[in-house]
Length: 178
Image (cartoon, rainbow, N blue to C red; front, side, top):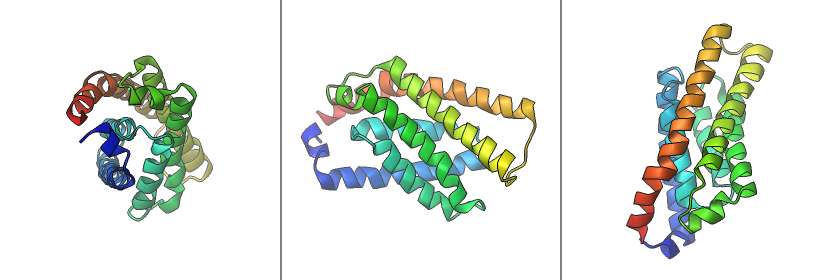
């Protein structure tokens, strides 16, 4: 499959559907593992966004995933914000710092990608904690220590994903597409 073939609308829609389902499944894994499986979600999200090389693909992927997830979550559509903040933050960084444009040339600015994925995780976590836990009281507040530990694990896993995907995964995918 060449890069021109990925630009065909039918291929892009198929890839969006495939990555959305993979994100949905990884969101279920993350829920089962009490968010410690989020590294898989971030891996799939970042890989999908960089494979699609389409501005706002992070927002589209997380929107589709959040709609699917709302059917199985007891919180329903309230979780939409968590997913969307992750995708929108990623897209803002990728558009402003031209990560999508560089991805077409198979160049990946690892510090920008790491920063974007880490901040998207932090913003999504802050939304989930302050809006869903503190304001709405819909989830259990585990206390400062456990919440801090979850944020720390999120930051570390996002740094790992933000480094591994552009450094090792994308060059292999790009090579296989040529």
